[in-house]
Length: 258
Image 1: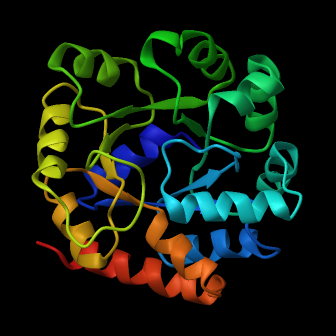
Image 2: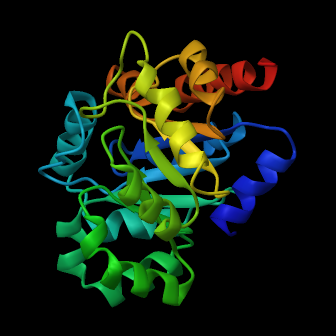
């Protein structure tokens, strides 16, 4: 399934896209969590390959990564389990440069596409150094998503939007991932700035924690990405059913918004 065409189709149908993030290997039933959130209305799922030093991520995803690693999770074990997921939405892998470098660009791309992965987000991969990975990914049909921060200058933002594939990931606020009590004005601004540069779908992530915030973010964006708020429920003992209920509440709110 092609990530960008799927998200464009959702936009053309008048829907706001909902992407959910789950840390691979977090628990024995993490793949059941993925199935539950897809059944609840997620349009795509971002699977995190845990890393020991996730510099973009705040305490919640750091805790999830450390818990997954303590269970013996490896990049290969996550990829192998992704290959067994029987879901009908695009799957992305989110990780860090170290993981991709250790696997090797070509091997990583071949492993991911073989597992049915449609896109990647390499959180600490600078635009100026993204060419080798983006090239290997594109060669096998994987769309590499780039991030745009509120502080990104206009000329660099235009280049990010041009070189991103799948969608443009608008970072809703400065700082690391994590739940927030409220969004800032940066969220709407970065969405508008990105959409002025590209017709590619623009999704907002980082800090979106509730149905109300998802609706607020989606006013300017084509959809939202939710991670920490979902993981907090899983870390506190919730399983697939709780994950499905939370994602379902986001889906209903987005669908009901004018």
